[in-house]
Image 1 (cartoon, rainbow, N blue to C red):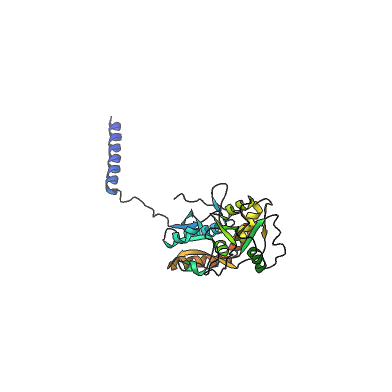
Image 2: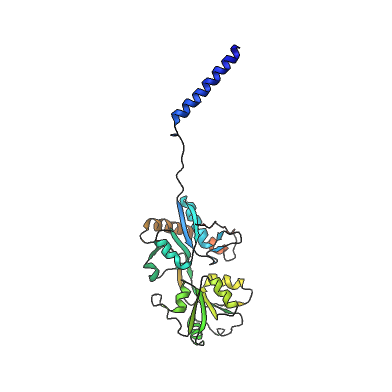
Length: 287
């Protein structure tokens, strides 16, 4: 009996102590973790090899791996938003995204609304035409290609992705320094991929697009189209920032300098052009 009583008293003591500690804690010892800072990227797919959605639904590409590397280096949570190309600059300028990464060329028009990082890739516009098109076979310069385009029948349709350099090249734009083509009916698409599809269906004469995605699009077209391998423009890619965001500009430029110097950038670019290395995909935000 005494033994049972001792056990009951011990239990009561333990229970009372537990209640006492719970009362003393009063929730004040609850450990909370500050939410991880987000690094929000506005992009536009498909624009392989810089950004595209894989069969697994993840975002791949040169720009996406650069973004992920920067986020990891800062301890940020990477958030990727896939929006229309011509909405990216406004989205970043309004502060809805931290950076615009979409194979984007710097020019005075874009500098009026956004700041940009240092450049990381040299590009040019090129022309894609039907595989049986021989009109450009004798061309060796941009001027000769443009002469052929300018001599095409009135109303000939030439495609491009809306809001890109190809857009302004075909239509003509004083700020970009492009004369355009009076005889050409400029035909815009949500993506260069859609434009090439319309070309393969015989609905347009050709497509003007950046050289790297042009090569990818031609390779995927199974011999139905070909690339006129002559640079029509000379451009440099960079990433768009909100005006006055000097902190992010300095941090991102420092990161770019590091990956340029240590070979990481070259390795990323190389593997998307058929080199060695594992392609890495990242989730796309539903927001």
